[in-house]
Image (cartoon, rainbow, N blue to C red):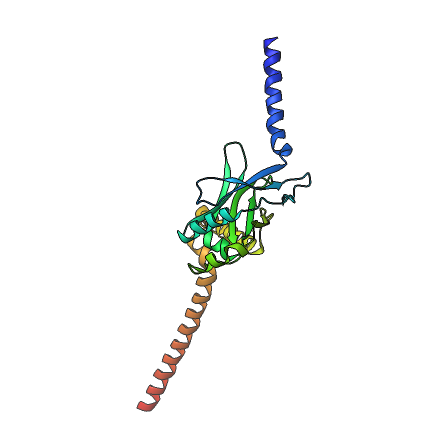
Length: 230
């Protein structure tokens, strides 16, 4: 009875672990406007059955004038605006931009979410629309005209399936070099003449030909010299 209960427990645990990712449909997205000290809800990442991540269509929480002034204070101190995606109960993905860049971009932010082969988020990268910061006094005069919400756009980065042509050619070159090295290491047990006869034979023929020419020239020279003596 105990063994049966134990097996049932193990089987239930395996099913729960295999189903946990498939049943997870949303990820909470939080942000910090006080330099990373505290985080508050911003939006949600929705993962429907088709596996395509989207941002929740619900209206993002608005930032009060006090919140925007708090963000302005962080910007003047050259502080950071932080955003993170809660992936599990104990883990999250976080990225930051300078608060002054977010103000310069009128509260607009781009998110790039990297996924692994199973489609699970593994990295987060935030970028502002504008990288330059406004002057020290410029945001103060426009703080009331800034957006009261943070507009976030989402991009996905999935693993590349297959190898690029350059990678394939590189692997082919490595394989060719490996084969050549294997042939060299295997060695050649033929005799010296068997290895290099294609070089030795033409050299021997040329040696015989040139030797015959030199002998003929020597004979002609000797004959000519004898005739001159008479």
